Image 1 (spheres, rainbow, N blue to C red):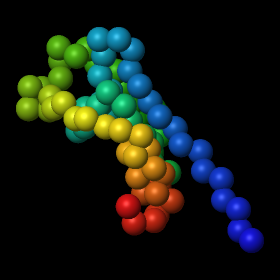
Image 2 (image 1 turned 180 degrees about the vertical axis):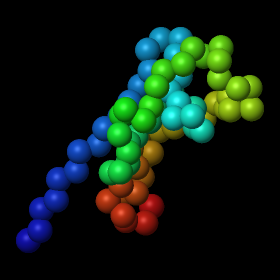
Image 3 (image 1 turned 45 degrees about the vertical axis):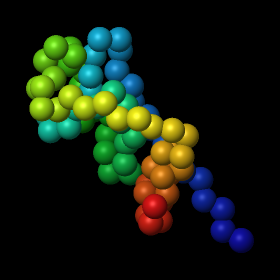
Length: 75
């Protein structure tokens, strides 16, 4: 039997802020195995480029998808 444990790191910005790595802007970031929290910074919502603003609906199934992607299993 093989047992694997994964640690999922989720970053969320403070109120009125958005996370960015210089290319991507997000209200929630699931770090990949090669990413570091230090690669992300908070910027005020007002500084997010208009073309980057998009509302996305999510549900609990998304968490499962993220876990599968992080483990290298097709979603």
